Image (tube, rainbow, N blue to C red):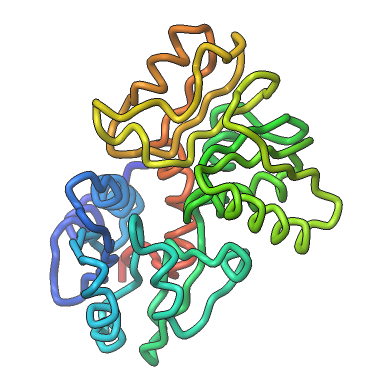
Length: 279
């Protein structure tokens, strides 16, 4: 999206009026949100900047406590390992995040209150739809039910998948999530299964496996059928080993970057960020 010269310069130059979208992670070296959101802010003429903040779990409470008074703070993005623990640090939770019990975005209100939500699941579904891969009516296997996995599970059911299989290293956690989904969506078909991709239309890796070159694969890729959509949530690596293996087997690779890009407009709207005025 092209914007006029003065608006473009004003949106690029950081000033005392610039709003800040802080992004909490630990470690922060793998985070790609600053690149994605700073490009989006420039393209839309929004006077805001995204910065990554490396916060260890033991320092999270002190860090978030101080953010209440940061007056030009638009909000906070949250990623591994803080999505679930930060729930206890906000003043209010809205949307499906109340059931997901994990937060990836927080808006700072003018009175300093921090309002948390979760756009991971909606962003993941938006990324699928944007690529012409609507999950509605598909049989889905979701591997990994941590913060991102929980959000994606709720969003997939809300999007109308035919069935959802949940696989997790700790089975009890997957069983708990299945029960929580059924409390919200009583007609949902959700089952706890083994991480075997055979027989599914869409297979999602919601674990962190793939961030390092020597990571094992989240499931046996030899059981993948050609044409299966294989999605990843790992953003740190543009094309993970899983994406390479899926492509090699005639599957449809869906990289994690699309989940992040699918959230951009939702996050900007949630943070109530507006383009720079010409006046």
